Image (cartoon, rainbow, N blue to C red; front, side):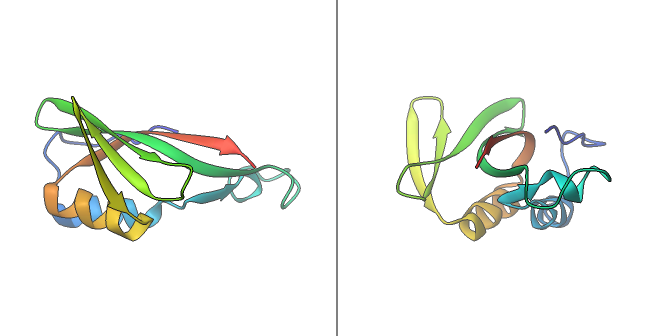
Length: 102
């Protein structure tokens, strides 16, 4: 899934609003009218983000914690609400989200 931003430098308020609108779990029935509820459920596994002409990634690891990959640095972030906080405070804009079928 891709998020289209109107600006490359969104406000912290706009970033937080967008991040709060994302869900770690996604049922396709919530998006497509004729899909049976619960048949196609996906889990957010990673996302590519943008900040000031620079890209980074957040990845959900096997231990259910999120890590940030930023060039050669890998930093443990924590749970999804910690990712939201990191993106909001750092004005990091989620761009491409990768989901895996459950």
